[in-house]
Image (cartoon, rainbow, N blue to C red; front, side, top):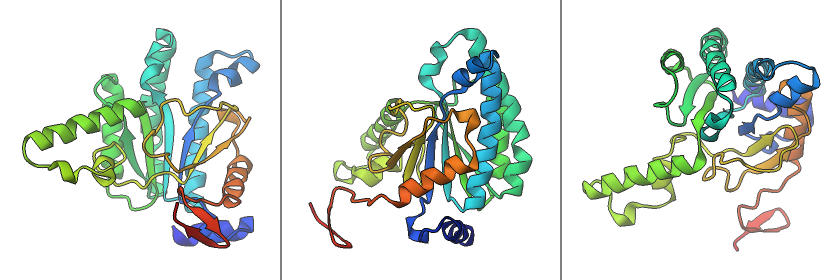
Length: 257
């Protein structure tokens, strides 16, 4: 993975340390993509799934350590039932179809979100794919499906409270590491780069804890149209940033607040 990342950096004319290791993407614009072509929204979502497969494979080839895709939010259940049903059917199909490529790429699928409300078929295929790829050692592919950032923090808080009540956690043990270890993303480093497509300028309840110091990149490109060149532009934009993490830059050194 490190060799691929170094090769990608060299090809793009940047230093390996200027490459993002972890990328998160808010995939937006499927509906607009379909509308522009006079097609039903379901076709936009289907093309969005094709883009997800393409971009995840590109990230493997680029040497990215973790990719998180915001696929379906808890708020998306408010959409018309016909659209939601079509999406769920597509997820079940996609989770089966993606297995050979995940295994070929040595990528490990993990799920972010509440699995309970998902339809039985989706849960079945999701768990099968997670189990199949569980021993893969390459890129972590985190799929946020029925996910909400606030709900994630609430669930983590409740679990910590239960453990405190049981005497497993003391108040002084509750710090950033403790909270991080009780989130859906436990064990996955926070994103270096957050990409949002379709020129939308909001985070939409996505990874609220984890993106505290992520660099943001917004593109006008609709998600189904996202290509390798778009991903490379985002990486090059990231490479020009100076990540300060709340500190002050003095020359090439980071100083405290």
